[in-house]
Image: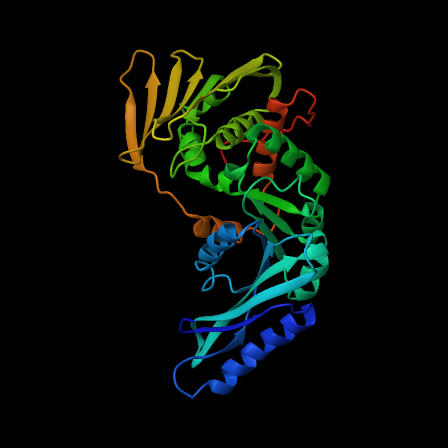
Amino acid sequence: MSAGEAVWEGKGVSVSQIESQMQRLYLSADHEWNGQGHRPDIRASVLNLVVYAPNQDCCDRTTRALEHLSGTHPSRAIIIVPGDSHAEPSIDARLSIHSHGAYAEFRQVCSEQMVLWIHGQATHHLASVVQPLLAPDLPVFVWWPGETPVHHHVYGQLRELADRFVVDSSDFAKPAADLVALSHSVRAAGARTAFSDFNWARLEPWRDLLAGFFDLQNMRPYLDRLQGISIQCARERDSLSFDLCQALLLAGWFGSALGLRTEQRDISENRYLLQLANGAHRLAVDITLTNDPKDPITIRLQAAGDPAAQFSLVLDPDSVQVAATVSLDGTSPIVRKTTMIDRDEGHLLFKELEVFGHDEEYERALHAAANMLDPNYHRELVKGSLLV
């Protein structure tokens, strides 16, 4: 046990025991304070964070990510690790409070963490275990690391608890099908639950660079004259590299911003060729997958005009620099370089916990990506903007 941490562990415990033992940890910390240093007894949670960790490795990964949050987002974190559903019903628990940062003179703020290993029939009724343990009157964030949640038998229960539901589509086993399923689920949840995706947060610097091409007044007309988008990326994400879900969300971002629907699809194992249109405006999308995550990532845009224009972003995996290039026919290309910074799960989670409402731009991009992938998917034609 590290300094600033109080821990209790128990096997075969009840929900009421978990709550009473958490209270005891605070009282114990207060009683043992010797009058020196910072007194760790201020309970200042700003949110509930429920994490579904399907195995112990995922639980450990989640715990590491939460270490980034204790000083900035004091919370009650409940990590659920399902056990054998055929075993005798029981709950094993590890409870801890973490003290961090002087909040006032001689006092510190404390965060709470509960790791619950749940066995037996209770694995099918997680909401009944989690709900009594939530801190009242605080928003509930549910983080589901790992494979897509929407096909899981407890997904609906946890979604009903959540004000915001956080996934990471880089973990999806079937990226295209799972994105479509997630889009349907986001629609079904309506206003009750907001959704977010770590992959959308990873795209933020890329979206900023792409939108930046059209910031200048003489470049802005090319946005409405885009004719093609081509993306080359790795099949699976590795550090700074793209994956298929990121490429699809990026293409969906363009499609939704320009108010385009998908008219043609030619999808194979390694290539997605799509034709998007709205009236006379047509846009070709070409996503090519490579098997080596170390291959350069390239995003290229072609726009009609006089002169015609080409815009590109190319990431060199070795230097982790992105070259942003603007080329107008008949002129020398303009190139600027920027360093791309990889953010781990702790930083990505930090960002998502800052957002309490719906991320409408993300939801539009997700629905547009689903429309690109599924010919039976229908959506409203709502035009947004790359330039905010």
